[in-house]
Amino acid sequence: MNLDTINSPVNPGHVAVIMDGNNRWATKRNIPGAEGHRAGVAALRELVRYCSELDDVHVLTAFAFSSENWSRSDEEVNAIMGLMLQALVNELPELNENGVRMHIVGDKSRLSEGLIQRIDDAEKVTRQNDKMHLVIAINYGGRWDIVNAAKKLAIDVQSGELTPTEINEEQLAGCLSLSQFPDPDLLIRTGGEHRISNFLLWQSAYSELYFSDALWPDYDRAEFDVALESYRSRQRRYGGRVE
Ligand code: FPP
Picture 1: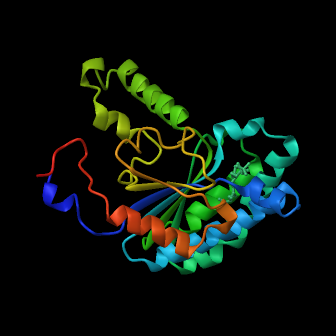
Picture 2 (picture 1 turned 30 degrees about the vertical axis):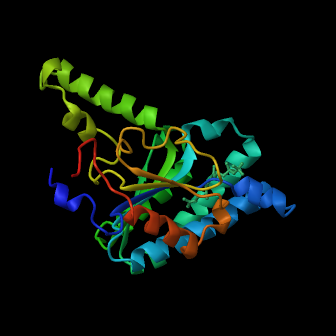
C-alpha cells in the first residue's frame, strides 16, 4: 500500500449515502409520508447533479429501499415503489445527458414486473455512459449481499471450479453487488441516527463515516460540502501506521 496517497486532500471517488429522515420531514410539515419520499427523490436528483459536476466523485451509491423496509405499511411500501418506478422513467433523459450510468443492485426477485422492466431499460439506455456511476440499492441488505456471494462460491466449489481452501477475500468481494467498483471512500447517513443499518457491510470496512443531522429532503449542496470537507481532513490508515 502506498502510504503517500492515504492522506491526500482529494474528494472521495465513491460516496455512499443512507437517505434517512423522509418521514420525519413530512411529519414536521403535517403532510403525508409519501410527500417526504417525493421530496427525498428531489434531494437525490440534486445530489446526483452536484456529483456529476464534481470531477472526482465517480460513483454515488444510494440506499433507496432496504431488505427490512418491507415491514412498513403496504401504503408506504407502494408509495416508495411507485416513486422509484416514476423516477427511473422521468430522470432518465437528464441522467443520460449528463453521462451518468445507472446500476440497480439488490434482490430483484420481490420487485414488480413493471419496476424490473424500468430497471432493465435504465441500465440499458445508460450503458455507454462513464462520466459517473449512480448505483441505487433496492431491496438490498449487506447481509443478503454476503450470503449471495457465499452461494455463488459454493456453486463454484460444487462444480469443481474452486476448492474451499482457495476461497479468499478477493474472491468473495468479486461476487458482491458492487464488485466492479472500488469500496466507498465516504459513507454518509442523514437523519441523525448513527448506524449502518445493514447497508454495505463488507464494502464499508474502511469507509470514512459521516453522520448528518439534516433530514434527507433538506440535504443539499452545502451539507454535502461539509461532509466532503470533513472527509478531506481525515487521515486514512487502513489499519496501517502513518509516521
Ligand atoms: C428513509 O426515510 C428513506 C427511505 C426508506 C426511502 C428512501 C427512498 C427515496 C428517497 C426514494 C428513492 C428513489 C429513487 C429513484 C432512488 P424514513 O422514511 O426512514 O424517514 P424517518 O427516519 O423519518 O422515518
